[in-house]
Image (cartoon, rainbow, N blue to C red; front, side, top):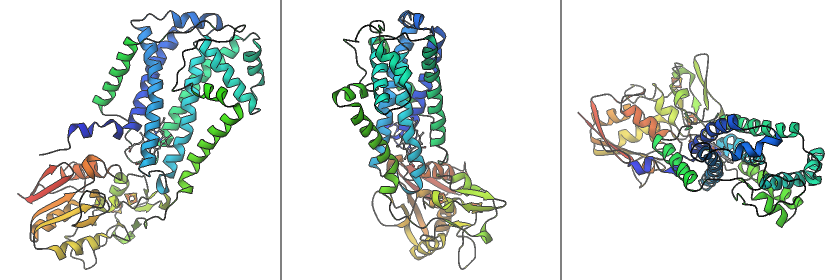
Length: 444
Ligand code: HEM
Ligand code: SF4
Ligand code: SF4
């Protein structure tokens, strides 16, 4: 049986969200080791980090730094990809908007992390942050005075940094969890080969280019000759090149623009799925298969949450009532798309029969012609068998381009249904072969 080529299954741009999760776990694991070895006092912090031996502690320290930088890159690519694909409006608004605070949390976690090294770069970053906060009149005055005036910084303040460098990543993790709450079967685990490939690259970088501290933090001196991290700390040089006020406007403006985008670029939506209580037995298949968590069961009946519905039709493809073998004049599914009903699909299929070949094609697939589906997983497998038993020699079902579903999970769900691993399944009397994005079926 032909499948999707491995290089497409592993394509990193398809797993950016999951790679974000992988990087978070790498940071957490290396961070726990660093924390065990770390002296959380002003007097001891700098030396305890400097003492991390290169072959283990040093590698983990470098890995921690490089994973943070990689997280920034992966996040930027994830945002750009969703943006370019127009995946930010309508039913996706929640996922998009809940992503925005994650950018702040990642940056805040990374910047505070730099302060713990207690070297000249930490001093520069903390002072720049304090100046930035002061410019907005944020209640950071005592902290800022400490940093800017060179007054003694207490261990209590340092403990606050440590607390922040643990608390902010935990808030980031909580935000990441919220971010995927409106997605059915969210892909939070990257394919193993990809995650270990990334870990290997970061470890190689850590070995070849170990990170090191700068000169010790000296309140009496102006930090100089710093090695800048252009992924996380670029905001500081940007502020000095412009002004704290301008940086606030820029950062605030980008945040607001991102958060408002789903509403500014809103588009009319396709009619959402409708439940027909007379044909719903409460089996819950539509709930399990909906890629946007838009269906719930209330008692023994499905209920669609309109704002979350993508009108993808995957629920109709899952419903046991949507079988063309039913001898009813009007085929009614328990759940259906008002503008593309399973009854209309059956009619189109019956009109096409008998035929050498019947083709079902997802609207997002390559090519044209055939019976249009909103998603490959909108096709109940029983339609394939019906066509084969009623005059089709062959049936083809074509999904989205090479392994990437416009509705996230349609290709996976179809593959499981056709393989008999998920209800509604294809009966074993039908054989099939998969060629990339197309399935070809025949009777055994
Ligand atoms: C820590 C940062 C982030 C992580 C770890 C993360 C992770 C994820 C994951 C795992 C998914 C699910 C992928 C899938 O199953 O299809 C996802 C989807 C999504 N993310 Fe993020 N994300 C992050 C930040 C953001 C940000 C900042 C935005 C935009 C402002 C964003 C926008 C989206 C959108 C729109 C989707 C839904 C795509 C769809 O409906 O097909 N994410 N993210
Ligand atoms: S059409 Fe059905 S499967 Fe698709 S989002 Fe709406 S309720 Fe979920
Ligand atoms: S799949 Fe159909 S029968 Fe089952 S709960 Fe959903 S609408 Fe009802």
